[in-house]
Length: 252
Image (cartoon, rainbow, N blue to C red; front, top):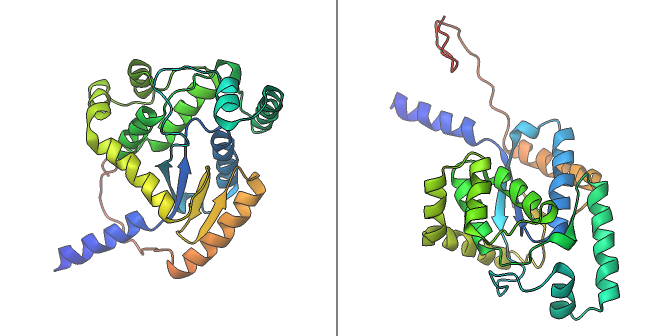
């Protein structure tokens, strides 16, 4: 009985964090900007160590081919029905917004392909505790480096760069489990009314749509966390010290 109580307490300690879920597509320019602005807000947040971030998959255009046929400009002109001048001006504005967030966008190099394989990689990375690292690397690859994020060899190399095992990654692309997880995220987004990304959900109570400024993220974060903390008081243990070993191998 004592062991069961201890395991229950330990579980409470390990999971006593407020969750923030972020629906995003790695082809979305505002998702990368929103990620960076959110990270700046989180860095300023006093209780950032009590926040758990989970990335969720969202495909803006699941019908997009896995082989590139259009440039970014051509894609928007063709699929959104916008004139070239309007698209060019819009992308210039997006590039400037990215620069203000500390990001370098080279949209003229962007390879417009289906993002499903990239999302499979993100789902696999999440299972290894590297979801954020996968998002960041894929954003950089697409918006700055002009890499093809539907190419499996390219994705495998990116995965290796963030510490994932090459053999396991290759298996993830053919394992229906990860495609199913992508679909689950998209269905969940539909259920809670997500119509565009980025979309941030704080403690399953507050939703934030779009790449908000860091100050706006911080204000919402403080409000959501204060309410969450009131219902989930911080656990502090009175520890009786004795001889023990620590993770670096030292025993005293």
